[in-house]
Every structure is written in C-alpha cells, then in structure tokens.
Length: 232
Image 1 (cartoon, rainbow, N blue to C red):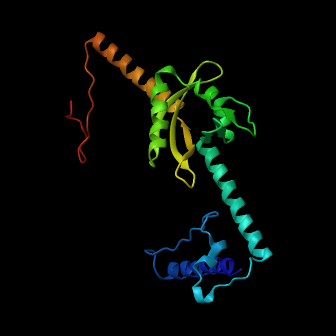
Image 2: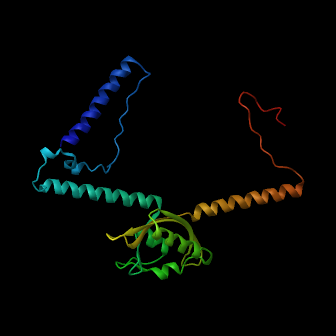
Image 3: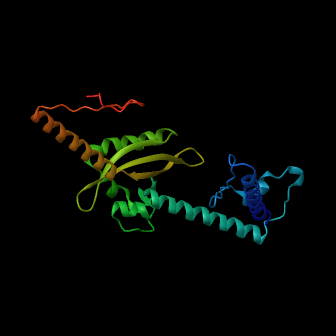
C-alpha cells in the first residue's frame, strides 16, 4: 500500500512541476519514467530491518501471496524476454546424461518436449563434425573451472541443414564442489551468419565485375562545409 501510494505521489508531483515550469520557462522539462515490474525484492524488505527491530513472527498470508505474485511476475517477464530474443536455456544432468531445454530450445532442436529431457548423446550426435572437438573442449573447460565458457557450434536440423548457435555454459557444483551439471544458454545466429555471407558474396561479385571492366572501386569521404564538387 505505502509503495503504491508513493509511486502515485511522485507522478502527481511531477505533473504539477511540469505545468509550473511551462509557465516559467521552456528550457527545463520534467519527465517520469514508470518501468514495468522490476525484481527489486521489495517483498522481502524485512531483510534490511535492524536487528533490534527484527520480527520473529512467521510471514502473514498477505506477505506470502505478495512474494508468490512477485516471483510469478518475474518468471513471466523472463520467459517473454527469452522468447523475444530467441534464447534457448538448457541444463545438462551429467550423471543421467540428460539435457533439459526451455520451449525455445526444444523448437530449435526440433524435438518433442518431455518431462525427462532428452538423451545428451542424441543431441550431440547432431553437432557438425568440424565442431565436435570445440564443443567437447568448451564443456571440459567449464567443468575444470568456474568461468563462463563460450563456443560457436553448428547443429543439424531435421531437414539436414545446420543452425549456428553461440552457446554459453557454466558448471554447477554440489556442496562438496563436485560438478553435477552444466547450465547454459544458446543464441541462434544462423540468420546473421547467412546475411554476412550474402554481403561477402555480393562484394566478391562486384569486385569481379570491376576487375573484368577494368575499373576501380573507391569511396569518398565528404568534408563538412564542402559540396564535394572537386572531389573527383
């Protein structure tokens, strides 16, 4: 309640200040940015309470409901962000050798979502032969340290074509420090790489035509304040 009242008070104060300034000057303006839900952990604000004011009573039903609503809002926004960015989130259970994806990851792999995940070896069998060594090295490097490890890998689609994924992975460890899983994200770069290849192919064709015609290719940098009429 206090939080919502404070937000509305800021908006009202800003509106009044905006109108007052418009009467006095045009050089100063006022704007209010009202973002969507931000995970600030305000629902757990008691964590900042001084020790001598600590309340040992269990959370009320209202507090529990507020926390649950906040967690659901964060989860929903995270899912929407991943969907918009087309980012696959995955986790590999090293003991069971199973990999679990979010919905985008399953769509990328062309596999049917299952509660038990997918067989890790079946997914790795779709890696382009030239990229297998790099993928294995990245996994071993992640398990050997604590850093995030990136690698670009091509995976075979059901139609035989390949998608280019930039994957980032980090090791998960148990209380004894043993690696139990690899968690990561994958970004599909297939379209960007294809676009870059098309641009490079076009540049090569232009160069071939220019060479055959015996003409050169150059660019002119315009100097501010000149019309460029004598540049040639």
